[in-house]
Image (cartoon, rainbow, N blue to C red; front, side, top):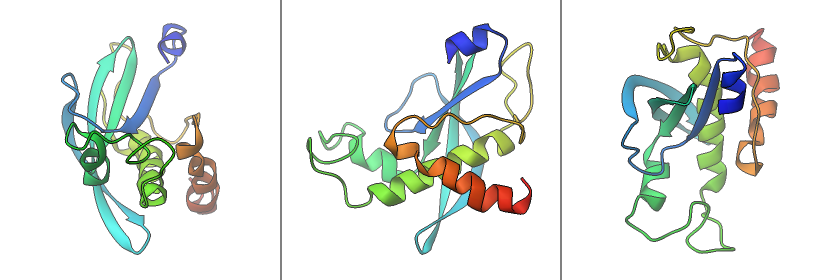
Length: 145
């Protein structure tokens, strides 16, 4: 991401808020996301480093798993064993990632300000973001977004 930013691109990374990141501040932006049979509220934390907007999706499903309280791993209680709610957690992450460029009004850079909007490129890195292209097609493209 810093290399893309250095070439003049506006860059945002999005990850779960697994911990208290000392440089990240609460944006006071929240969105409702449908996950399974429930509606979940997520909040966004943000910091700006090396030309990159770093966004953290805040929800108890992320913090309660790892945040120094359990000695657990990110994907499961121990290596080789998944949490039973991984599908819900990463569905939540993917949907929040698709909303972040549209709802966050970020003014960190001297060159860019405001929401990223809808003209963005998503790079889905690793299996936990694999739903992003599916959601883009089924939930956004189908509505002309």
